[in-house]
Length: 416
Ligand code: LLP
Image 1: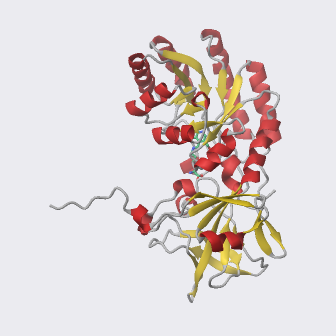
Image 2: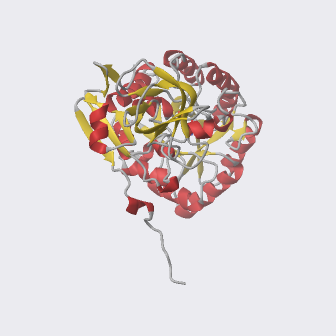
Image 3: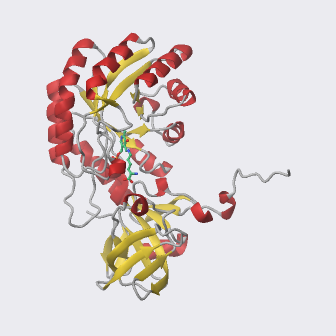
């Protein structure tokens, strides 16, 4: 399934023509299909119904309030990685008791905030972090529930910037050190050992790396279960892949659920998971308007009003995003789709067959629901795009386009 479809040669998101959204809200514009978001969430819930896991939406993928609350209303919790994300999650309606807090650099202020809100659990990434949470839990007289993040040292076969479960990664504790870390946790006052956590990278396209990781983590869980009575939760992280390219197979949710359920039952543990991209990635489009067609003797450039500041994944990871015409055409041209930003790295698609479009036509960048708006910036003083959500014929503006004044908010220009 896709978040859009063509009807009589026109691209629609649900019942709404994309061209109408562009007219009304301007471009570049992020468009999300709400039914698609719900469909992805419910697909996971159904596949895992036998064990009823807690799904923590990884809000780093898309932290817009309307997106978070779409899942919160379905019962989702949130995986957060900063005080800012914690604030956003609560504000969007996620119950603190359904929030897990990961990240290697939690400050005293962030830990205090999370303790006072009564979050479910800290995903702890190092021994000194255990000590800090213990201290703050005592000062504030709140229980510091923790799960240690372990590195199972498997290769998730993703881009090196998004692979996280290898030994040399900055995240978590390697498996050999895990028992020691738990012993330390058990010796520290104010901490409560709730479970274990792993996240091996993203996007992961097959079930295999998860199976390998669980195979390595399971013996450690068995040991820990014997030692610590409250050690009951197995958080398998996120990373579930999505189809960026047409030729990619969809992630095998059933197969994945099969593996996880088998381990959960065998270990007698409850399961948490932290999908981000899987829930939102293919629900979103970035709609842009073609500004110029530039025919160099060596190369053809389609220059759009959307650029790397709006969607940085192609520039940062050489990520592939499919480019679609909003008015259907089968004609293609070979070239680059670039943005207006003053950087050679500012491209949305490089050296590819692109839809044959002309000046002022609309194009849509697919798979722009995850790590898209969330990673945008106003570099080159480009106000960030608006976001809209569509369900049926309903269209809601969920974030207003930034204004020029927003670019200088908080800025001071003192008299010297
Ligand atoms: N849990 C933890 C602890 C994580 O670090 C992440 C992602 C997730 C869950 C969610 O992963 P997901 O299900 O969305 O794949 N900016 C990169 C991705 C960075 C992922 C960071 N951690 C990208 O655009 O591909």
